[in-house]
Length: 195
Ligand SMILES: Cc1cc2nc3c(=O)[nH]c(=O)nc-3n(C[C@H](O)[C@H](O)[C@H](O)COP(=O)(O)O)c2cc1C
Image 1 (spheres, protein in one colour):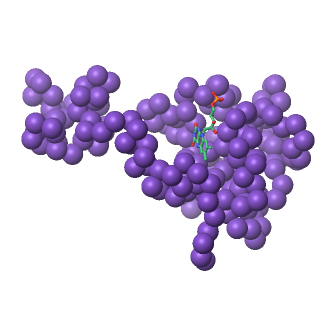
Image 2: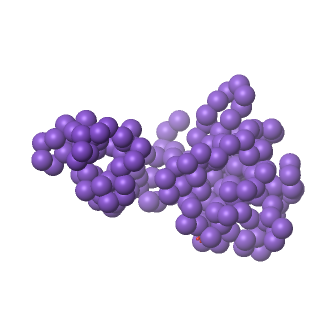
């Protein structure tokens, strides 16, 4: 499915919509203009609906030739237990994208509740490590202390994800500690009410 369309505004079925004007079914080639016409929702509505999915918050770090780089990310997900794979999705339009796209190693940090300031910092700026304590892990990826968990990864694959890239990491090393997680819900930070 290239795009979630449901039933079209003119009562067309999903298949009708995907078939296009010449009756040929080729969902992969539905262009951007066509996609906009088919969608029953605005970009804002899409973002709002996605915001109903409560997530944790991670910071992904890597070492570049210009120094340490980080990005606050909530697109993290587990993929496979054997081999151990995880994924995350950097936006192509981010200034940090070119560095993360080619990074052979990166570290994904699950933030603890007390680390909201790190999330804010690395959402605003990727290279502002001023006063931030870190060690160097595999491939020299910066490892931030006091996180709920850290996954040190090797870049295993990159898949097209529209305006994002789906980066799959093979997990080579993990650490974890007992800590309540920082959560993100409907555009704001939250924490667990019950456990
Ligand atoms: C909670 C939260 C989650 C985010 N998740 C992602 C993400 O999964 N992918 C992404 O590309 N940017 C994500 N961002 C945005 C980036 O942290 C950062 O703001 C963005 O890369 C800034 O772009 P720049 O590099 O052009 O300054 C998230 C921001 C916040 C606050």
